[in-house]
Length: 414
Image 1: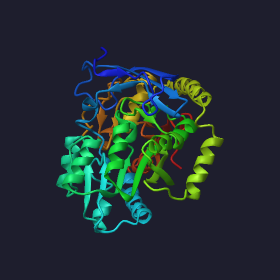
Image 2: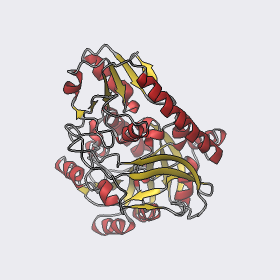
Image 3: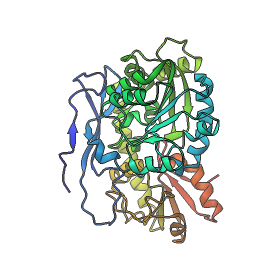
């Protein structure tokens, strides 16, 4: 194992430029969360994984930046794998159309559109001027084959100018759960400001830092996630480009996310946004002391996890959901094949491979269930109910172990 030149450590805040960063939590050296292996004994490169907090911008952020070409050129997460995501996509489109006042001849652009799952509902409703942008050539190819026009590229202001020249400005620009992945955030928002029509609406979905804090989602910290936004830090970033948040909605994705709507003109803040801002203040989400407490709780959580696994007395344990966030959890807790024989994952791109660091084999559902597990550890805990339903439908009668939110707990599926 070794450290690569493809990792750089920041010396200032990613959005404010402040050189004062308060160190919060060090999760040790870890392999990249999506660097699944063909063989269990493959040599792996590890990188430091730690977070700091900027008092000026209120941004919680990774101290390390990995070369984006290594992270995203070939991607193994496919949005359409999740039934929750597919159902949510329909509701999301309905909400965006209503709030933006989208007409049939208006253009919709989605940044990091993956396989096009969230653009499909617009197409079905007759909005034909849709365009996805995603750097992962494998998923962009999948989207294009399904009729979702997608450019295989990284979003930036230069690309925004090209799209305006080749197509048009957009009435709606969507960026779902991608802002935390962007190393050049200022240029990314500049591109959104450029392509957005004067009366257009931008939509950014992001994993809520308040939820991360409240429910101890330290498993969401991995090298692809450079930033962990609160409403206050997202507003700080948008305001730098004269973009103004005016509404907010809840999302079920990532165990708790915000969808924030913004515009170039000043619009009246909705009661939902005002209430969310007040709640964030009351919960002290943007206080550095809260994040130091978070780090202390993460260390306690690790100890509880290991105590719980050690108390199972040799039961046959398998995992479910080899998500990127599960790799942070497994590697931080030093969980490997001694405690967990395999991990079931419904994504065919992951099956037959091995989890990074822990080297646990990844199998399909039938292979995992044929092993007659006595306990299923739901690593993709934010899809708990979906996973439990699938297991019960296939006559699994055993117990589940769920690591989050807040602390690991046993669950019987009721």
